[in-house]
Length: 124
Image 1 (cartoon, rainbow, N blue to C red):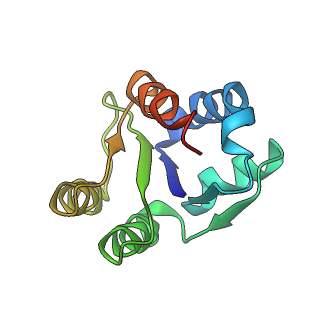
Image 2 (cartoon, rainbow, N blue to C red):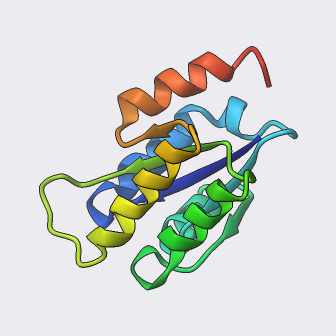
């Protein structure tokens, strides 16, 4: 199962804390993490094996959306910062749309991401 992790700058610390909290599930052999560049770098520093794409604002969001459309990415955790403006918002909207079109679960906050992980914990 391929899970994409993305987080706006104001949510990167929250993402790493979430990953650490769920390390037992996310470190399983049959789970592959992919990430936008900076988020992936933070995850690697926390000890996770991650396939990194470009940084979100320079195409990473689009690369992950392409993987969703190709059927490679099964779930997306995108911790969005609703209190900040983002110049690449069209890319974010495109990623959300592609997840909806291809019926891929998308969590935009920690609570939803945790529910998704809990749902697959016994399956993977």
